[in-house]
Each structure stands twice: as C-alpha cells, then as structure tokens.
Image 1 (tube, rainbow, N blue to C red):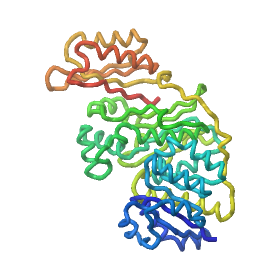
Image 2: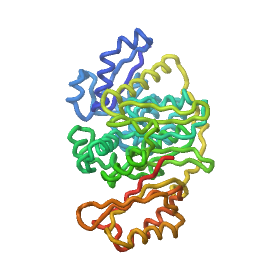
Image 3: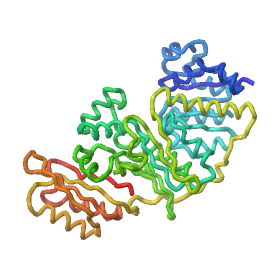
Image 4: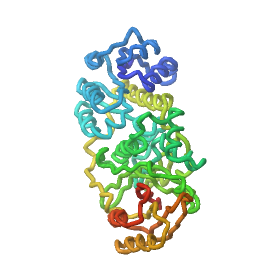
Length: 429
C-alpha cells in the first residue's frame, strides 16, 4: 500500500523533508515496508519547489491538497497561527492525518486541534515542535508513559543558549553576543521571540501538557528573557558554583502545575549545566525511571526534518496497518496552574546603585521588612564613576514577597542608577 502525502511549506524544513524522501524512499520500502509518495506540494515560493524537483506536483493553493481524497497525510511546515491553523484544521476535517513542526500553533490551539483529531479518528504528530531533532514528544507519550512525571526542565532555545555560552566564555556583553549570533545565522534580525523567552514558553507549554496529562497554553506561561544579563552575573555565578541558562521549567506540584521560563542559575554538577552552544537539552524526572536527559541540536533543516519524517513514517505505518490513533484525549485532566507569585525559591538579584554609604542598608531593610532572608551579598565597583553592582543572594523566599520588595526598592534614592533595571535570576535547587 502506498501512503500518499501532501506537503504545505517548502522552506528550510519542508525542503529538508523532500530531500530525505528523495534520498531514502527505497530504503523506507526495503527496510520498513513503508511506501511514501508525495503527490502534491504547496508553497508561496515556486522557486523552492523547483529546486527540490517537484515542479510537476506544485500548487499555490493548499485547498488542492485538502480536497484530494487520495492524500492521507498532510505535512504543515509554514509556521504561524493563522494560515497554518486553517491548513491543519482543514486537513483533519477532511479526514486526513497531520504532521506539523508548528510549536506556536500547538501551544495556542493544541486543544482544539487534538479534539478535532479525536473526533475524526485521525492522528496529529508534532515531534519537531519541541527540540528540533531531539526525540522528546514520543518518549513522553510512549516510552515514559508508565511514569508519573514530576519535572521537565529544558534548554529549548538554541539562540539564547549560544548567546549565554559566549557571554560566559568570553565575557561578551548581551549586545555583542546577539550580534555574533545574528552574524552566524543563529538569531533572527528581530530576536524578540528568542531573547524574551517566548519561543521557549511555547515549547514548555507543549511539554507540560503531555508530561502532566493536563492543558497548558502559551498565554499561561510566565516568561522572562535574557536582555538584562551582564558579564558580572557570570562572574558571580562562577564564584558560587553555578552557570546561567534560560530554562523552561515544568513541575508537578500537589496544588497543580508549575510552568515558567526565565534565566536560571544551574549548579555546575547538574546535567543541564554542560549543555552549551546551539545545543538543546530536556531533562525529565519520573517516579519509576528517575532522571533522564535528551540532548541534541534543536534547530536547522536536518534535525527538524529528521523529526518531521520520523512522525511521517510512524503515521504512515499506522495508516498501512489500519491502526487507530493511540491514547484518548478523554484521559486528560484540567489541573490548575500554580501562579508564579505562590512559588518559593532562592534568588540572585543585582542592582546598579550609587557607590555610597546608606544604599546597602536601605535595600537590606526593605528585604527584611518583606520577610526575605539574605544568604549573602556582593558589591563590586564598576570602575566607571560612582556606581556599583550590588548583588543579593536570598534564602528560599516567596515570589510575591520578592516582587513586592523589588517594587519598593526601585523607588529608593541611589538605587537603579544609569537607567538600569534589577536583574533577577532564579536559582535551581
């Protein structure tokens, strides 16, 4: 039986998928008995389709794919949450299975999409939506299914991990690290989604939904980025035995689900601490399996196309064997999300202050008044006039108390000079 495919999107990942099929079509048939045929390719760029040798089956109208009764799998690789949603929902409504790499779509409309898939008895596979070539969605849904997952932590954005690595290794500023990442093609001209944590937030929304059998959407994930991280923060972290990473965090707590994204001080002996450059890693803790970590390249045409094609082959195998979609949406729970304000952890907090007497005492007094206990304090002159970096390390404190103290400290005279903002980095226990 030949499984027929329609592909929407011929960019980096779409082109990679076409190349994999062209190179390995006969291998798939000989080794796995899976015969794939791409019968229609849709793109806004005919030149890309021609470059991959699919001129004869090219269309600029995705409805030709949705309306073709012979197509059993639609691969959506255009990104975004509007046009792509129309493609995905239309494919499912037409009785077709879907493979997508669209993290933003799954993080915002995953419920609606999966509910329609269940109604139509079709599959939606999205391994490439998180971690690029790292297999994580399928392990969470199958290999680790017997576990109660207690934590899923991830370095899931290669751009920010590259920047933080370069800042730690060379002492580069945020601006210099961003420029280098852009020059190397790791960062977009507009890096907002990466450096402000929005890309990571979409990914942890997907991971948490699967890991905790619940529903988490992108707009429910508090996200902070790396714009305020400076070379001095890496120096202090190194002295304390930590490295700084942008972590996507998901925890199962007695009161609900804790999901967030922010810069984090990670102990140097933690498995995530040594994940550098553009590599991604996802660390999962289960009650039976214990600690596991999935490591690999998180972006690029090869890794992402590899994950997409893995999904295509698995869904094609199910189509050939007439296997019904596995795992019902009815098993999902509506667990409450624990507000960030109600979480307790330790904090690294840095202020740029006037280098004069009284500033230290006034800030410390505010922390004390809000019940925030200080573990240690470091003050470093900046060598550029009358300002200094004043760093506090707190004992475990409530996020609400920290934020209230920061709001009050920001109003103190001599604090946050040079148009600065406080740098807050949570510490991974």
